Length: 473
Image 1 (cartoon, one colour):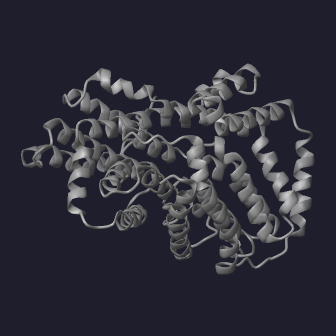
Image 2 (image 1 turned 90 degrees about the vertical axis):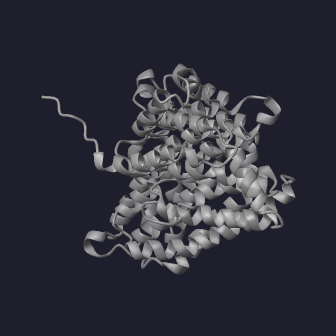
Image 3 (image 1 turned 120 degrees about the vertical axis):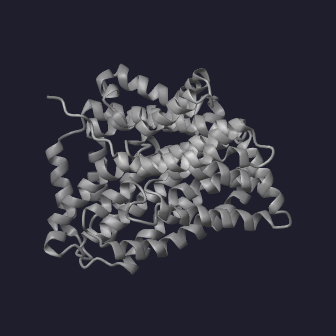
């Protein structure tokens, strides 16, 4: 007998109540805002809250929001479906397919073992090795959860157990706790470094594009390069100082990795093809200004080559749930956010806030927005809903205050990566790493509070100065 799928109806309460309150308060809406804009706001806020409470997975919540929007006459079905044709949406899906090749061929694990073999003689070296794996795979892996949970975490677990570091025995501080925390923060740095390293980055890019701010793959990389490299280099050392492992030397890690590589055998043809196609995609993304190839087209080219060479099958693509799930919710949320802009809500908010902030330097306004955006993540379980809810509005306010559009768009985009250094429920990698039991909640929050301040200085202040040198503003 087929069982009904579980739906947490209790978690539907808040989205419905808050959405309904906003909807019914339309008679009291600010002057200059159309009724449609106000109703779209009600639907958008209700949908975002549903993405947070999650009575259903996020794609299900988004479908309900879209359906209500059409039924209630806020938008037409034709307009709603147009959201599924967004370039950025399909770029995410193609990047998910590309990342599947790393796992299927075993190339991701091989790269991880090679890094451990080369740099794993010291515990600090092991941390850098694990971060190196994340760095290599992140440009084509828009799921930072997949990188953390599918490639890096299994290696950490094996290494920790090899050195008798196990939370079940109270020995987590030997090496496991340090490696977990270092790998998590390496994931944050790589998530900010590449536009395609996590889906929320592409949400920000799409929302910025709706405001006529066009950010290319290379624009993002160049702007993030200096702050990203500073974090990748310095953060493991900072964690080593704040939260040192009990075991400082790990000479056996080299032998363990070598043994694992020997068991894997020589690189297969599938791995070689996967590596070659990945490098081609990277080259084409980097050289887009010369070739004129759209970033989404490059992702399609890479997936096409994976299919033609047999590295991936059509079944692999059909079973890549993350890609199709993201395609659904991302298309709908971007459509709703775009409607808020085209119906006049975002322009109204920007103009109103701009008038209220007259006389205040845009630098102070942008700094305040970054701080609020960062620390408000304590209220969110995941980056997607947070970026979808606040990025567009905050960007509009920053621009209305006089901030250079490209600078504001990128700084708030980077904020969407670094604000995961807050809680143990901040994003998927946090849930995986914290859930392993190697770090207590108080330790997690204490260390992340310190590192969060460091990120704001490096990405906020350092990133602003760096982009001045680059001529972005």
